[in-house]
Amino acid sequence: MKILRVVFSRFRNYDHYQFITEFLKRIITATPALLNIENKMPEFNAAFAEMDTVYKKNNSSDFTPLINGADVKRDRYWSAIFMRLRATIMGPDEAEVEAAEKLKALFDLHGNVRTMPLKGESAVLTNLIQAMESRDYGGYCTTVGINNWVTALKTENLTVQDLTEQRRQEKVDQDNEEYKLLREAVDTAYEKIVSRINALVELEMNTPEIDNFIQLTNNQINDYENELAARQGRTDSEPEEAEPIPPTSGEEV
Image (cartoon, rainbow, N blue to C red; front, side, top):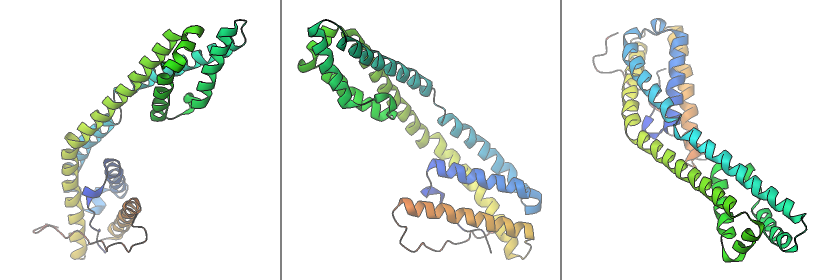
């Protein structure tokens, strides 16, 4: 039994990173010495270290705390306006009470934005603010005296949307450039290790430790292949039989 072939080009960055991380942990557990791959590890470790650094950097964007800060502000401003409307409804001025009731009904229609996901809250607040600035409700905002608060809410909502788009674009740029190159370097080092182990099997130099490593790795490959198939809506079709990676020509054992 040899290690099966895996086509990394089909893997998303997250899947690829998790696969390689699990593979490395398995090597460390079995030890490179017992797997007879000590001379292959320097290249693999160096490639993985570079990829690991960039992956973690990509997933800890500087935009995230800025987004969180603006999100907290817009939630606070939304709450302030909502409480202002509730308080005004209990006041003595009939015109203010009527205006507050109209606006509170509008708020109730859009729901409690503080419990919504980031993107969903942005969309709902955009619609709510547009309504409050419209001819139908703008006068009510003036009567209750919340125009400045609505402006502040609009500003923070736009800030969240702008920063979220910048974070998304940052991730796209990183995924398409530096990380792609680092993935390729790791894949090359991975295939050299697999080729080495498969060569040992072909020469009948495998040990129980190597056989166990191969079995666990093949289980991992099959798990990931099944996940890919499920994503592509092919769960009812027969998966193609995976092929082992052959030993590299001239591989020394």
